[in-house]
Amino acid sequence: MFANSEWSLIAARVLQALGGCVGVVIARAAIRDRLDMQASAQAFASMMIVTTIAPIIAPSLGALVLSFSSWHSIFAFLMVVGLGSLCCVHFFFEETLDPKRRLKLNFNQVLNLYGAILQDSSFRRPMFVGCFAGAVLFCYISASAAILMDGYGLSQQVFAYAFGANAVGIMLFSTLNKRLAQKLSVFQRLKLGSFLQLAGVGLLLVAGSMTHAPLYIVCAGMFLAVAAIGFTGPNAMAIAMSEQGARAGTASAIMGSMQFGCGLLCGVILNFLLWSALLNMAIVMAIFVALVLYYVFKLEHEKA
Image (cartoon, rainbow, N blue to C red; front, side):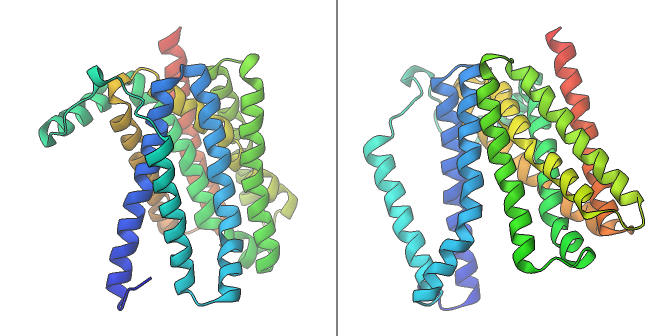
């Protein structure tokens, strides 16, 4: 809000991002400390609903603030939200990890802990499932504008509606994931989400191989591929965190880092492919969904 150069603004935004990461990591770890795997899958689904709503309403809130004042007011608003979050944490958030299980902050110990967690197959395999399933979403975010606006001529407003529809799809599938908790196990719901993503990517591959595929096929494929994360994300997280115990915070941080790392990788790969934007996105999505299914079946074999 008080930045006087672009570099000070960038530095402040980096600090803001680091603070935001803490909230996500600790919230996941607290869920793991308090709940078993089945209940934590439902809690992670609720988290996904909230984190999906946020980017939908954020642009509208920003536009509303700008209609009354300058862009500086957006950061003033964010500062108020941050202070509110700080007060909530201070007055209402309690430590969830037993004091006897807490680890001292030591750099070498943290590095060793990272290595131990990554060597643990009970964490590593579901982590890869969650990361690769999330990479499908990043592919969609990176390529959807070029496909729908440049390729199909959608206006900015109509594209916003299409983008919002897929975000609503994640919310609906997350809610359905919670509703099915009494009928299907965490692993069964993870498999369901993986096959839904496969169906969506299959539609996109078919559409990408056509000269000019009907828009409804493209939209249906995008919807299934993206919305299915409402199943894969929470359940993969619940399985990955279920055996971590006192390492839950570090495990949560690793999973978040890997997810965004996969998102970065998506953008890089898409820029190197030379086919149409739709086919490029479909191919990259197919690679990641194939990896998702590989690790899902590895998990199934491990549990058999």
